[in-house]
Length: 371
Ligand SMILES: Nc1ncnc2c1ncn2[C@@H]1O[C@H](COP(=O)(O)OP(=O)(O)OP(=O)(O)O)[C@@H](O)[C@H]1O
Image (cartoon, rainbow, N blue to C red; front, side):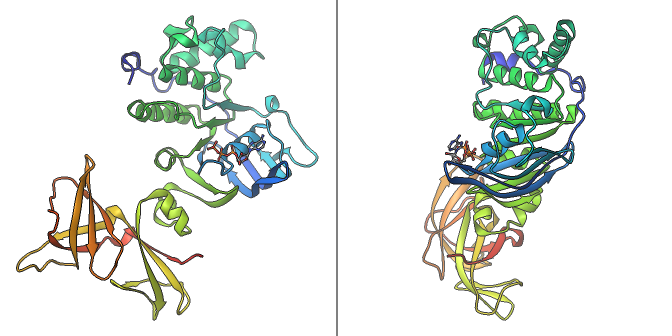
């Protein structure tokens, strides 16, 4: 964290101007570039005031969705609606400045030749100069930078520039705020605080907010709901807990956790595997399954006497120190692949030690095996 960021607090909570939140809906939206389809059949609706993350790997179409919502990219088919009114379709195109959307870009896009105040006033040019300055100063005050109004962007740290970009985005009180990777330029330690403060500002202004991110933890932490995208399609649109505990498929599960994976087959109401049976339902008799066990959902048991330990027999291969947790590589009797276990640091098992393992039920996810 830069010294300057440590010393300058954010503004008082509860002092940002409120927006009138709008609903946003995508209805069967597709988008192609030079014949290549980058978004397919995107249908979702975001309620007024919701904070929704668009989460996916690079190239999954997150930014394109954001740009289509903003009206800076055209869709190929489908419709976008704001408060149930079409703003993009085959026949309708409402320009960005008439959508009441605010945009915050990954690189902040501050104008280097304009003062911080003028940067924030840039989005307020519909207002008379005096009113625009009052609103801009209020937004700067909310992010704790009113004392920097006459500075220029290059005089500020990365964290402060991010706050200016946020102030500029909220100053016009947009109904929908669209943020493209707003924290990716910040270092790790600064990022947590900036995320929390930004979320507090978003909650205060009450605008509907769409945040593009490729960071699962960020999406879980900030969002009311998450849109998980893969190859231009929605894989799952759900609340963070639902996405984490009930991922629709193996790929979605992998996105949020490091997993141990064991093959199995469904017989008589159970997933049968080389290390035992797991009770589960909803599969066809004989169906091939993949049993995924989160690394933090494996419990290691110490041998009680004469080598006996509760759980499945296993042996420690090595232990890696990761700070708050230890990562153990173990071999579990019956399976060839190494098993990885994240265990709270402090509980020590030595290499070569015979142990037992058991699994926490909510960390065991079972899916049909996909080709
Ligand atoms: N203007 C464009 N012309 C041609 N192809 C484009 C254009 N914009 C995006 N693409 C392509 O569309 C796909 C989706 O891009 P998009 O930027 O939406 O993905 P993303 O999920 O935001 O990725 P990243 O996290 O890397 O920004 C990519 O394959 C990209 O190369």
